[in-house]
Image (cartoon, rainbow, N blue to C red; front, side, top):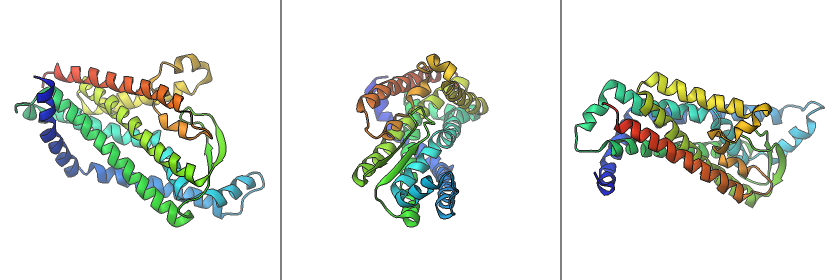
Length: 289
């Protein structure tokens, strides 16, 4: 079947995927978790800035009182969610979308129609990319609204990056116009991070074909890569781990953003994503539905 025919088949399949997603309340579930994370971040920061600071950390609380607002509160919420929470939700829903339907025999019914397996596989991926976009948009709007109501809408911001996702540990100030740019870029680049993770989880769902292993195995490998990559003794291995290039949004958390590093890691990210899709698509197309 030609590429043009596959593309023509995608539209009705995508509509079908969106209908299933609404019936399964995927977005509502994801936004519920986003709401919980936003609430936890709000309580944590509010307690930090509202109580009398201790002598050792007085400077930090003093800065937070003056420089926390809706912009960097939303960035903090995204950063707190991007490492574990969002990938975990994405892994669960991606595995249930493909491996769950393979296990239940639902895809066998879909394959009886005049559609190619590649079109079915790509519709699953594009549907999850749409889910990632909706989830990030909901987080951005909700966390910014909450942060604006409590701390103020905007202003200069203080950035403290602990280096959790491989960036350098930094503490610096950003003027309001630059802060808005970094805010938008952080969410924009995080979208590509989640799309790559969607391809990663979809590949394992096509390979393993069972819901529980399709969640546990890739999530375990994902966490293992993070743990190993953070160990100084494993620094030579870190360059070959896919997680090294995953969080391209980390470069927004630098005083002067280096676009050459963004393009370098982005190129590897696209390469890994395409590899996941090719491997997953071949495994799915050669599987016995």
